[in-house]
Length: 224
Image (cartoon, rainbow, N blue to C red):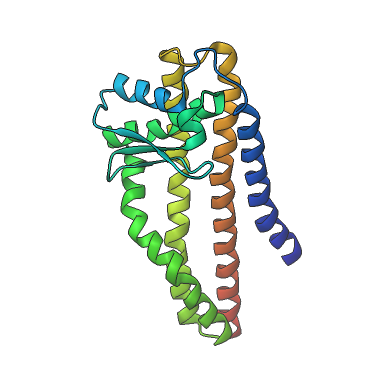
């Protein structure tokens, strides 16, 4: 049982990472018919949605793209920022999707932002209490660790609809603005779906780990 469990929590994230890297690398080599760089794609969608105050900047790293609501900045990895590809266009549009969510006060994005402090505390503290609870056979300490961990799991689950919605918005924007052709929509969708798989894998692993700890807690209580 534990062998199957550990195989899942190790292999699922690994598969997701391989999937996103493979799909991204494939379509990063395919230029869009319109030939817009990721920076140009992001700027076009932002302007079309009245987001003139959102900046588009390059950032180091690969697949380090993100939207920062605090600074109203769409940061694109240098490959996506400067080059014109289907993968770059899809990623840029996805990040702008978050900017549009921010503008519209999308409920799940707002909830995720409110959960950030709790998620940060959870990631730093939960396993300390879990390990103390297990090794000291303290159900109270283990329960505290589980509660903290649950906050992080909730953050992971709330992230899913936020990411799916951003990808949906990205495809709508790229199609409506003529950034991609009908033939390019399928590969763009593949890039976005592969990226979403990493969030699904992370959420699945988090839920499984939480359930395992709840089972350990239950067994400890029964032994008492």
